[in-house]
Image (cartoon, rainbow, N blue to C red; front, side, top):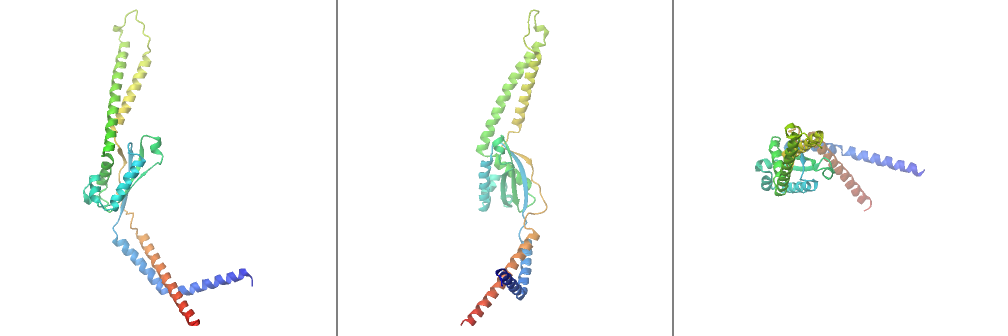
Length: 278
């Protein structure tokens, strides 16, 4: 008999023995699998529902590294159930903060803050309540905007914007006066020669006005964090999930059944071995 045929016979015998083990212990395996299904269903009914939502923010001063540190601090406070400190940071009542189970802050683009002066981030929150998203959004915005590091830089940028705008106002007024003088025939004598193109004056004036409008817009939106997309209240919780809970429970029950079945067979084999070799 060849080695290949021997291997095939050995594999066939092993599968037959495995089938016999399962058949001899089928009641135990089926019973424990059903118990697992029931325990999974019980887990689903008893475990509080967890809801998840996301808010998208535009951050200027807070970059990826700083937000990672902030995220770690918030996560540690949640692990410690330190709702008093978390309540102060978010400026929210402790009963609202107590619903939070998880907070994650992730950039939408890993390289965004290296290429631009701002970046977009997703703040993902898991909560045991589905009716406090407005308060949680305000709390996150308050926490990210109201600290000394951020406020000092926001105030400094506001002063810089106002200073630039004032300078542009002065230049605009000067050019506007010059433009009016060019078209005021009463201020020109017969022998005066104008060595300036009025079109160039108008173009320079328009450029300054556009630059001023841009600075005024940046001053208006001069904040550390700006909400782009609000939290939404979704009806379906992210956990527990009925199908997943029941399936996991059944799988665990099935595996325990297999463990008991093979344990019985091993114990029976050892006893038989002891009897034949004693």
